[in-house]
Image (cartoon, rainbow, N blue to C red):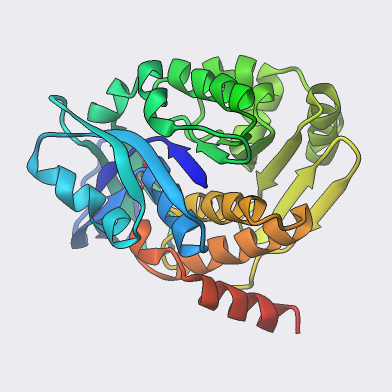
Length: 302
Ligand code: RIB
């Protein structure tokens, strides 16, 4: 079982020719809403990868809540750990430019009310994979890492969005997944040693005894374990919308670990899924099905 403890949002998405600068107004060319939130996106990605998934989180008692949960329900994710609060359902205001780049402002709302006491709804047990991000209160994330360890579960922590205050507990996660910007910022906060990113990743893995995975966009994925450094390529694609690509990677990666795949295979499948997620608009609507990921992976490896 994969247990995701994290955020649930409704994404309000405007398409623009180019992203505006500060104080500038640009004309939008399209608008859509779609279910999102890093936790929910990762839960759906893990389910589409073939895993059994339970989600712990919170939504508001408002009209956005059912839209935010719609695809998780369709994906047969266990939502018994999702509470309802008087705060509004989390929302993300997203602008996507014609080049696929985006800017996002997240209003946490109900996600801020996911507290350590909610971890009892996770029913953690030995062998579970617990998947976490940083869009719920940090004390809940740290308590989840501790609870997972006590239960004998494996933990995967996605370091998005960046929070300097999280640096102190990152090493509690068995697998840390950061994009290159996040890794560089945490690397500074942790005073990692090394001339370049791979060397600093090796330093992190040696100091913590854990695995660190850095997603590098079109350049693929780099991972450092205490004994090894692995490089996995991304698929060659022209991105339409990169929102949720990192979440797709994390969900597929956790599903690979839960299925007992060796690290290099779990990374390769996750990297292919993350690439395919860039070919469609929206976060959750763009998460690929396992059969499409496996077909793309087979094609790319000949
Ligand atoms: O990672 C993409 C997600 O970040 C979006 O779905 C949005 O809700 C924000 O949380």
